[in-house]
Length: 160
Ligand SMILES: Cc1cc2nc3c(=O)[nH]c(=O)nc-3n(C[C@H](O)[C@H](O)[C@H](O)COP(=O)(O)O)c2cc1C
Image 1 (cartoon, rainbow, N blue to C red):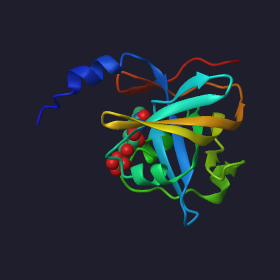
Image 2 (image 1 turned 135 degrees about the horizontal axis):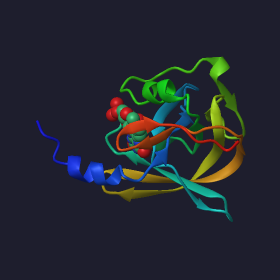
Image 3 (image 1 turned 120 degrees about the horizontal axis):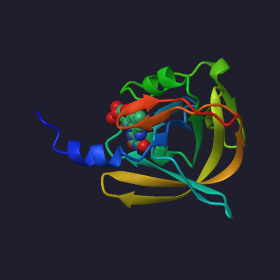
Image 4 (image 1 turned 90 degrees about the vertical axis):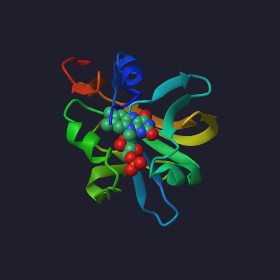
């Protein structure tokens, strides 16, 4: 069946983005991880970011329940990670794959930047919810990003 949203998706997809993995800790101390490209920086003072979560996503209740999340920006070689966390089934994280900072949400070690955030506000917006987070700790390093454009992964430029 034809996707009636294809033309709109094609237009939205002309805005090139990075790829990130949003994570949260569950009450049983397990983790949820989800590939996103809706991450955006918002404010310097206070330090705010946002990303958008689809209402129908399997991880929706987990991120709604959590009072914090982390965002790991993927490097150019992160396509397999992106695909891994874009599937329907929850993906366990090995202890060697992440760091834990202030909030308890895991940051992927193979990131070029990371943001550990407390949820500041949730805004309903159509079929997504906007999760605004206050950044409590962050880092960044040189490297090439994984880029998403027109429904495809790209790479090819770097900070150094
Ligand atoms: C490149 C890419 C970007 C994505 N960005 C988002 C996003 O910003 N927000 C979101 O809720 N889902 C996003 N997704 C979808 C989720 O990663 C995931 O595929 C989807 O939630 C899985 O479906 P389920 O949770 O309903 O099982 C993206 C997927 C890909 C491949």
